[in-house]
Image (cartoon, rainbow, N blue to C red):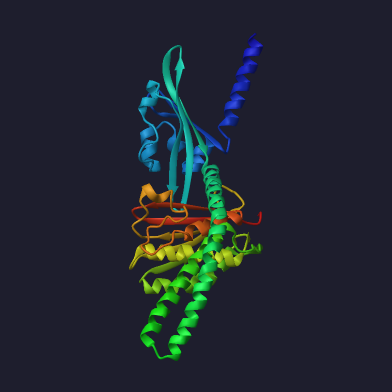
Length: 359
């Protein structure tokens, strides 16, 4: 029996030591005074602390040092108020991640001796789930869009043809005033036709021609257009390339469309003045993806509408169609990537993740 007890204790110790070194799951142990007794490597690495910086300190001290406000949990946990699947948003510099945390008190002979908290990094999982939901919505809307757009385009073509004939007849008769009216109609027809073209992209984007390329090369090719737009709005553009990144697998023309749309949106969101930051980086989580970020210093997107920005026809612009970001999301999805957004009162950040060559 004694030998069995020793063996069992050794097995439990091995399990605990292994658990403390897992990459995807972290654990934090607290004593009855809410002090950190033990912390796993995953948590230290994730928040950028050494174990010595956390151990023997109160949980509140660690929260303050890590900039975790509001606190993800409090001392009510020691009183038996357990929690499950609580979402913790963590943002440091250009990186934004999501953790799912579970907490529960520990007891010994009916006496509460402390608590443990499990941390799970679900950043990519939650992004993927949201991407799937968006794709399903876009697929349904796209099926409707295909039929509707063609039905609209057919009469538009006929109207445009007759208006051009009328314009020629008015020109022959020297009716300049009436020609001006016809010109306005033709201009508006072109605008509607452009909207229909965007509408069709929701149902079936252009043929995708994937090839390996440098993400910086794509950004640099759209920079002249971004710079011209920025000059008109008195916006400063800062571009931070990162040499040495592995190539990405994408369609250059479609990707340029996405980057150009994000850049122009950022500039327009700031109105007059401000700074647009464009930068590239790999994934600190170690996945085979690279990111291009578009960060503005505008007023930000209100929290109550942030989760709607990729919805078709949702727009905050007076003259917007609400299709630009939906098309961007569709293109990035078809390229095997994801697009994320975060925002506060200091500005908005769009991040495009794309598959890259394994290093």
